[in-house]
Image (tube, rainbow, N blue to C red; front, side, top):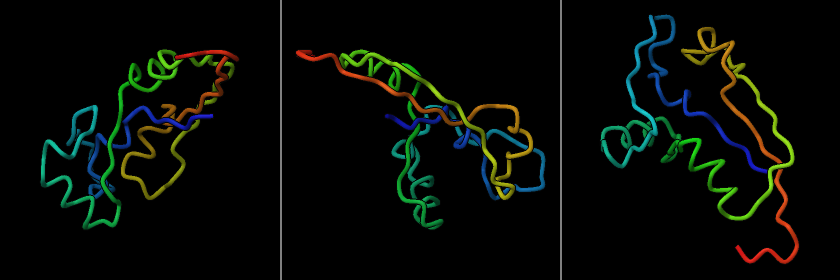
Length: 106
């Protein structure tokens, strides 16, 4: 079982609640490329976070020899999130269920 996200949670500055949404970050989100992002994450007590591409997340599981046997998607539901209303119809999280075949050497 693997829990994943599509990165939309990193696009907008959460301090802008109630204001028009403006994309403030690019994907994949990598705060190591902008030190001010690390400072903001740490100041918000969020730790250092990254997003990953679909290729990295799903492709990585397949490359490692897993067979994906199930999938589930979910939506943001936190009304405190600046983009929760705008993103209400966009699945932002997903999970995969995968198995690794016996004897797989990958």
